[in-house]
Length: 246
Image 1 (cartoon, rainbow, N blue to C red):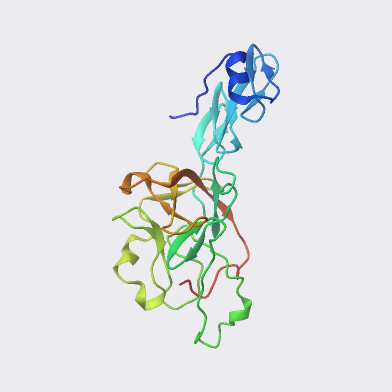
Image 2 (cartoon, rainbow, N blue to C red; image 1 turned 90 degrees about the vertical axis):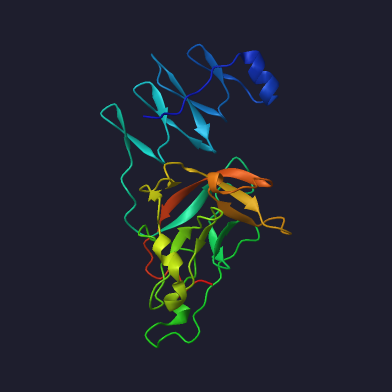
């Protein structure tokens, strides 16, 4: 089982790397509190922060709570997400860290310029457009949280690795067959493609603060891209989604 390892460095090396931040000790190992957490007193374990989030000790190893849990001293994968969720970005880039992914033009985006684009005109009378919160909400089955007859689905485009949605309703097309394919959503944890929790946020052409989301090994050009993690943030509001996304 893969776990997160850390590398011990000298105090001198830490000073060179971090400048003015105070160095603390974890047993005999120096560390920066912004990058590591020290657990325990008698036999301390030093665990790194990954994409701005702390990891935790389990039988001498360090693990991410976004993918694993420690049960009786053994690491186990988290169970699968069961309810509706939004996608939160974990990143070393402060402009992206903590952002929520949004859908517009049938593509997922993050950044200052990201927005959720929805459509509710001509909806059947039982659907009241003003009751929707119009946030980007996904379901672990591969569906979006919508009421449009025929549904709407999220998927990874196999041609370029872009995370996107189908058109709504009957216009969903053959991409509907790709809904949720190869993606594992861990309970309040990582949104993982083909066993990897790493994604790329890549600047859209001509936009300074709008990033598309891609699977790294399916994308040919990695320029203007930042490695990120995506994590499921559960939502229980029945109308937090939309009638449909555009």
